[in-house]
Image 1: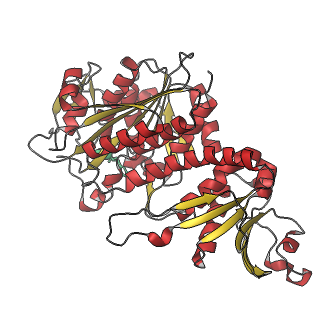
Image 2: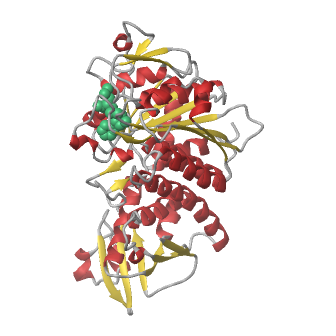
Image 3: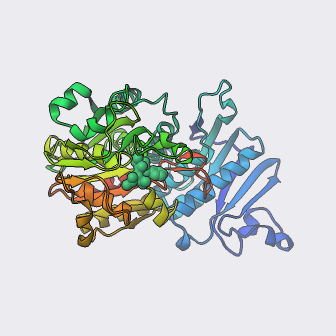
Length: 478
Ligand code: BES
Ligand code: MG
Ligand code: ZN
């Protein structure tokens, strides 16, 4: 836990410095020692100056910095100072706010919070040693402005931390019902209207695809709807739909022992949309957002579907289930139909840890994205840039549509074995009707075993939550 204070504190301090010929002087170095610190990107220098413990963090050249690199240096500096067992320290962000103004706030608050984040976990001994007090020094803005920018940034980062916590929760502790309860609690507090549909209601609604997966477990499926209407004058309603599979065994198309590990994170898409709407509501954005989360387990039981079974989705289309491990697209199909028909959303982004194939294609630093509306995707790219996240578009080539044609039903849930992420995208597109839609496949980015930067640690990353937030922020008053 980090406690932030907007006060002076000098015994231990992090100071950010741009690369320049004079950077060494700022670090109190003489010319002959100037090679020790020049403000180069990611360079960290620590020293005692007038009895103060100082960390100088090089930011490189302002024109070369982006949100991802920015957060990385901040996280590295925070990890360095705390590695000296310092529990209280200040961060002087003046150099950063001089250049980036208010926008710098998200990156440095995220850098510190995410860099020092540890999942509290369920061990007997908790991470009490992970409590820090951070004092903010910003000489660019006055206290009142600074506080206001800070609060706004902190809400976005808190959303990401919720996302991480949900992803990191063990599957036996975060069942669909527990997940629905936790979402209700957190999002109601944030100012959203939350509705949870249970299995009987889902049956009445005709959610045959969600039930087909969720019935496999004694812990029954839920559809959680979180609504934040911040712009009643607008006809636009932004729908965020997230895959919430709390454990994915694959069902009868059973996973291997190795691929069963960490499937507790198969609700990373759901956690991301919830983290985003949390921040949107907390910051009272002037925008209408409805988040829809289908959540369930995918298990092996006598209630599980068997490859070859056909089910009827809420949209009316029949689906032949040829692989029970392709469950995400089934539950999303009903959630998309619900968002379009019942909530009348005008735009949709769905987020899901959907395919292993996207990890094969893009690895773990970028998520795949697909769309039926290039203009909406271009807006999303702008938001992702602000968030410091990377997405890479995959094409929905028409030749691939054939892959999903079934011999017995309207559509089947698996493709031909190639272009697996695209097959999943094409499947989802069948359920959004005419709505502008973006699909984000975050299977490779939602959690990490081998962090590739300093603001990630083992487990959930919070991926996609900030991009969704900034997308909503850019659509205020529209
Ligand atoms: N949740 C998985 C996808 C996944 C794989 C996420 C690896 C994270 C890491 C999804 O439910 C799944 O099992 N997808 C199958 C689809 C296939 C059967 C068409 C896959 O990718 O193998
Ligand atoms: Mg699966
Ligand atoms: Zn899955």
